[in-house]
Image (tube, rainbow, N blue to C red; front, side):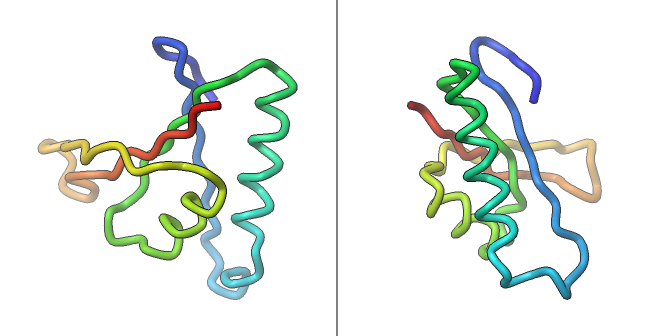
Length: 88
């Protein structure tokens, strides 16, 4: 996590398909949120590919809300992301 204007950024990646659909992502995010609360962190955001519906559903299940699309025109591999935010 890094702080910018009171916001802390996070991300998780579960690259191996054999670990998908086992709730590891949900557990990781819930653990992260619990630790952030203990540290007094109230605002967390992340960026996800807009077509990664599985990840978006996981983040929403953990309390994140869709915020906006961010454009990265110089990045040919990831020209845009969906910013999601959690405020406590």
